[in-house]
Length: 64
Image (cartoon, rainbow, N blue to C red; front, side, top):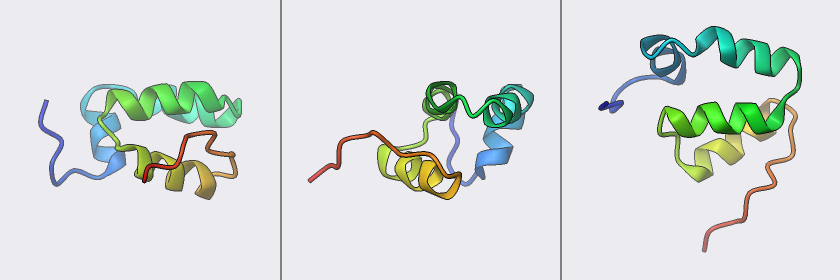
């Protein structure tokens, strides 16, 4: 699926993961959040940013 030009919420809604994502956030399930973000093709630097904004440690290696 081509996600170019779509916001994160649009991506999640498009493939039916918005509710699952919200539940993972409510449970503070960092691994599930990362898994869902990967499913909607969010790049690693954006995942790090999103996790930080949500109050999670990223735990992802910095890319050089």
